[in-house]
Image (cartoon, rainbow, N blue to C red; front, side, top):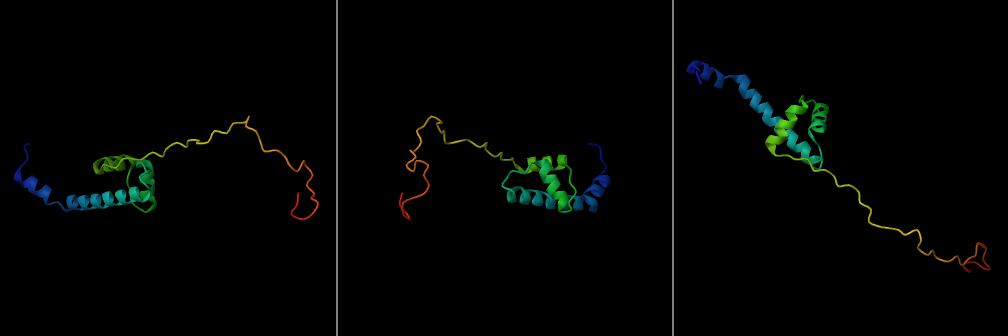
Length: 109
């Protein structure tokens, strides 16, 4: 690259550049904190919304890049799986009361 030493020194000593890196590290910390607080299910869009609610401006694209840099991958919840298979043709219990709901004595059928 054809850059003069004076321009390079000005670039490295630029306070805006140093502030930007500090802000980026704070943003990375906050993204990681929110990600793990929400059980690793927040993607970039939800993360950007969560950051905007607490007053930090970050676009979805910026959050996507930060999550990729940090190696944060979203865990998708598993689909609900029915574990019981009830058979409609199963025999039901017999009706011992024979639809007579009045007993001869208390606690007697």
